[in-house]
Structures are given as structure tokens and as C-alpha cells.
Length: 193
Image (cartoon, rainbow, N blue to C red):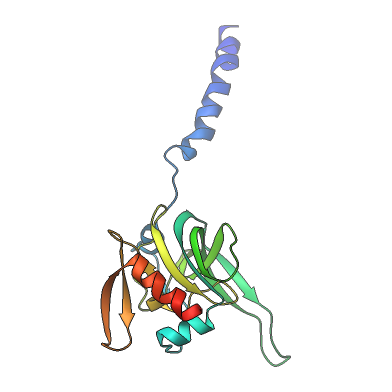
């Protein structure tokens, strides 16, 4: 009789603890944690970016947004249908990143903007985009140039704000340059106008 009372009292408690244990400590991952698992095989994320000057990038981008990263969604596979009967369907491994816009410098003001970043961990493989070493995290402010499908225009068109400044590729000096974020935004505004 005592064992039945014991099971009636403690089994539900044990099951509740067992169910909640995996949820303990859950938080939004950084892309560093998504990309840093050293035991996983690594493959390149497929991306060929044509070089674009600042003016060409502003013209080509359908959306240019400055905002705060509010969520990093789980990595997934995005499948593209074959464009002709002779080709097969292809796919990209992407990590969707939600950005709450502070200012949309070009394009429609939607909230959130979902930026499809190439790469991430998917089915036991780590996909990494060459030249893209940014460690994006929830809470960071970012300025990014996006195409019509919400992919970036290349690693040089993703800028993370630090201490009120961003670092960008200067076409004239062929160097990375630090500039106040507001000054770079003004440069984009003038180009869009």
C-alpha cells in the first residue's frame, strides 16, 4: 500500500523534472556556437559573390537595414526548384536571423526583417561561408545589405556596430575603415536619394 502512495506522489514529480531538465538553461545561440563545434565535419556554404562597389551594392540591394538582432532561428535547408528539366533541385543551408529595424535605409519597413545567413550546423555537419567570420549574437546592432531573397550581398556588406561605429570596406583605399554608424547611414541615404 505504501509503495502505491509513493508512486502516485513521486512519479508525476519525477516525470515533470525529467521533461523540464532539457529546457533548463536554454537560451538563444550565438552564431559562434552554431559554427564552433570542432568535432563536426565542416563543408563550405555555397556562395559566389560578385565584387560590387559601394554604389553598385546600394543600387543592387532591395533592402538595406540597420537594426538589432532579436532572434537567431535554428539552421535549416532551403530548397530551390530546378530552373530547367536538365538540372536538379539544389539547396542552401541557412540560419535565419531576425532583425528589428531601427532604420530601413532602402526597401520596405517590415518588422522583423528575416536575414537568411548562409551556413550553420545542419544534420551533424557545420557549413561555413569563406570570409564570413562574424560572431552574430542576439542584442547586437547590425547593418546589412540584402538581395530580393533576403540573402546578404557578401561578407563585406554585413557590418556589426561596436561602440557606435561600424567597419566597412572602402573602395578607394582598398582597406577596412572604421566610421561612426550614423555617418555610414548618411552615406547610404545620399546614395539612395
